[in-house]
Image (cartoon, rainbow, N blue to C red; front, side, top):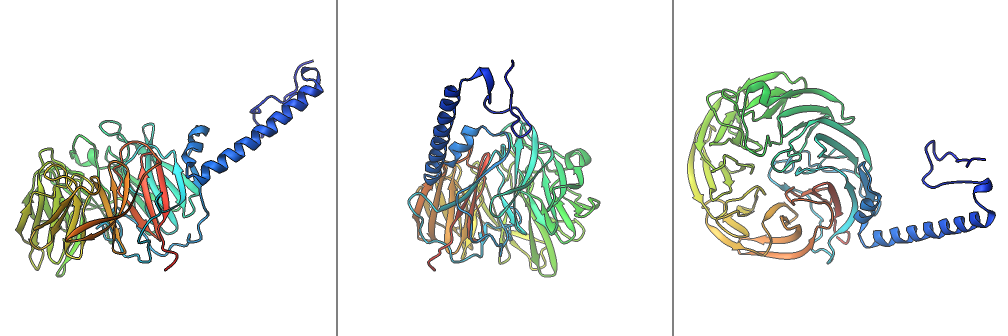
Length: 469
């Protein structure tokens, strides 16, 4: 008589279940006791791992092929009161207006809330809007958007197209969320509008194929910009340096003519000067200002990197436009005329040649990490470009700012809480990122008292609220 297999959730069982002549009663008893002891051991081991913040080991042991979320502690602050809906935050300047945050971290770092794994390869930030956390990742050769709720439960995962597989493979674009839509663009130039609640595709266009633009050796890199009904993209083509699409339909509103530069990995910003709204960005050879109403090129200023790449988003403050680029190019400040139609050079300082981590402006001082002209972090006076200090207290990397503190994420995986001032760079707390793989290139995000850190295929979320205040 053959062995009888008992159905296990409609599939083959993970272990043989048998009765009859194949196993004796004693063998069955021994088997069940062994299984019970094994189960107890697994439960106790997993509990210990969680207590030690080693939850990634569980995910690796399971060798899951789908996205996993490990919730360390259900949050009591899951209601969203602020948002971080695009690259570098609400104002695209790497700063948050949040208060009531920790002034010092425990030795092992802030409290870990949840970890999302198996996101695929990528360098994008998370964004937080309308109760969702969105992030992109490349699995095999396909780009995906993942949508989690604020407690880390995966709501949906949708593909948007083929992604960049050459030098530094993986996703580049941080999603931009606007009302009920979300926008991404792949390293191959595929721009996609998706429904923010369901992930369904509304419209799409390949900007490199449509306009014949060019990009650098690392693919197409940009996080898209919203201006009213417009969606702005740097196509990097002759007579289509920038393109404004109708954000709802994908119809072209205007194209910027008069420039023949490639896109240079830069995500643009909006500036209001007088009665005019400008779009300011960097192309492969220039800093440019474009009238947001009709796409007219108002001005351009020569600014070249040896490799034609400018991945740092410009900063704007009090009529001044600040740009920085790596490979010994350094920092440049331009003065914008009162009507926004002209610019003049105010100063240049080579010390802060930021590679790709961006910089922040805090009370009239610029903080960022240098690439080749200096080692470590540099502070510049906004008005004059004067170097206030240079320090190697923290590894080169990226940063964001909230509640009087810098949150620095080094390329060595260090996370540091820094109290900045023009005279000192005081490291208050620091710990090493334990989860994820690959380069530590993604920039930190602060939203609703939480710190979001993306490292390769993992997104880690920490509680940084000061509960005692």
